[in-house]
Length: 417
Image (cartoon, rainbow, N blue to C red; front, side):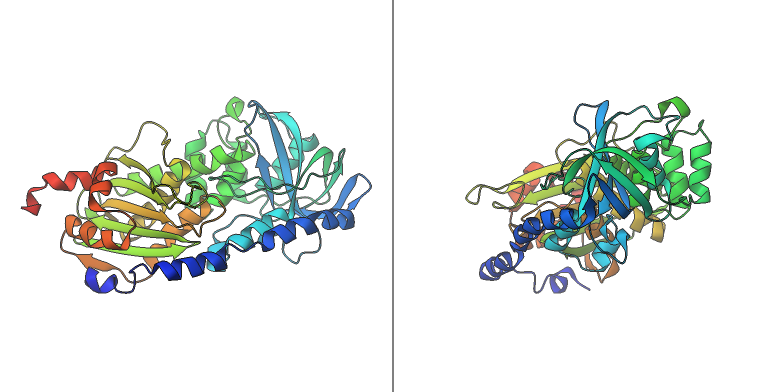
């Protein structure tokens, strides 16, 4: 399919954008938050939370290395507590921003302060939390609380939102959790560096969501180096480690033999992926509309962020696009590994003003992952692909050249003359 045919229907209709914004900016979540306290009353008996199945944990980063570490448990009746845990299944089920926020506000974060060094800690609150993290199913727990829950919502651009918090005195397992054999192997080998253990679990079929929970609980790495890892850090660490593993697998692969353009839209974010012939190279350029969550001034300018790597990868952490860089890179590398090819890859992300609340970089990862499921267009050259895409974006070529390493480089390509 030619790129001009592929782009038909992507012309931006400002009135349609406003109508969509009105639909997406639903304030049902406000009413939902008002109901949270009633949920507390029905499930918190005295100072304890009984009969709750915990599908996930959360580790904060404030005051590191003395952090708040918690067990996330659904409040109220639920057929499947794993519905509340961050997962790629949320994309497949078509969850929107409201759906995610309602799920997360339905999780009580029972937490207490702890030191991050946990090499031999398998008892008490932290021990229970670690058992929850390495189990292959949601674990029944009983949590003792020493303060009334606080009904608030913590939003983050990397980790999934967390809901009400309560200080916990204790947490006890109500069952013996089952630990998968690959996790047992990674846990028992305390000479194994965390990066190797992560790639091992990924090769054994564990998705990054499961791996980052295990890493966050301090269950991977060399013995005395095992520490609780703040959730925000563990998400990016796993995306980075698995991405490096996949990049190593395509280093000697043949290049794609044509310029391909892929597209996906999810949660008011557009993802355009250009794959061009050549050795591995990657760049993410983010464009965030005025009025969107991280660029809230409605009359302001479009926000640009970008980060790039060449064939050898990066040596330092990406600051400007943070976790979105590693999440989008992972989606591209998974596709290239599947087709056993390498490419120069440019991801253009446009967050419209309908992206009214952050739900975490999982939606970036899934948005790019699923971009490769549909049809793609073919362009004559990388330069041609970018030029034809610009009218579908809220920017112009000059602005894109100023921000993008890869787009600025096409000006000096002999193939353009």
